[in-house]
Image 1 (spheres, helix red, strand yellow):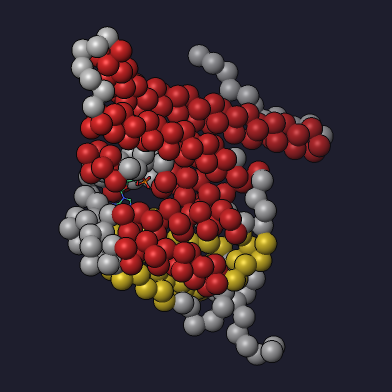
Image 2 (cartoon, protein in one colour):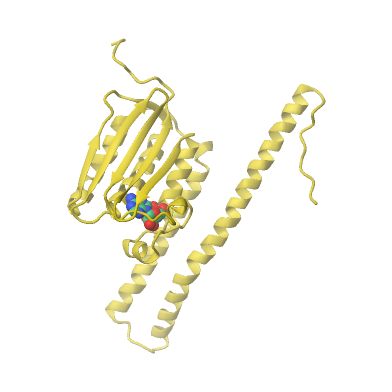
Length: 265
Ligand code: ADP
């Protein structure tokens, strides 16, 4: 079989350290290569169906088999919109995957950041008569994060919560801290995710219910982008859910600074 690169056990310290670094780099490159390979497979699969549909429809119009009536053109247009959204999301996923090499990290008040996201989504929630609430931590908690990236994470989660919750529902964003981490939770009483789908929702291009998500315009990349960005911050992202009851998404980020407790004011 193939021989693995081996880290020498003997020899000068520097040489061993260099070898170990090279070994880690090789492993990392292999992982990236596998990732790209799977992405290509997924993408090919994802692009083939809509492209075939579009081709067939447009060919029929070109061949004069039927008139390009408004309804048919609308279908074609919708499919093209979905494809271009897919391409946009892919670009962001690719950025997210390499984010850990280019994080613009700053000490950030996580309550303020989550509150900003909450305010941003109020109009969208109101449009669906969804009660979008915000529950801050009692003390400010700080984490070292790339603000734009974490805003994107929370936006993906909150927009899903609104998207997958019916009119008149509830979505709550809560921020809590413990000494070493900030926990941001987004809870909805929406359609929920089945136990069979739940383990896969953070995978690229995964949609719990194809027809449902197609209708809502999702391409199934939002959560994989969120996961990549959170992991770039050494954080975690998890979901619990029950079909027909609701879902809770929990983002945990390590705090670099102890939360401010007021004693040194
Ligand atoms: P999409 O673009 O399809 O929303 P995501 O990666 O954001 O892709 O989410 C993946 C899938 O997880 C969705 O298609 C949906 O089935 C499910 N999902 C995500 N968030 C929720 C939620 N809050 N409630 C119910 N289902 C959800």
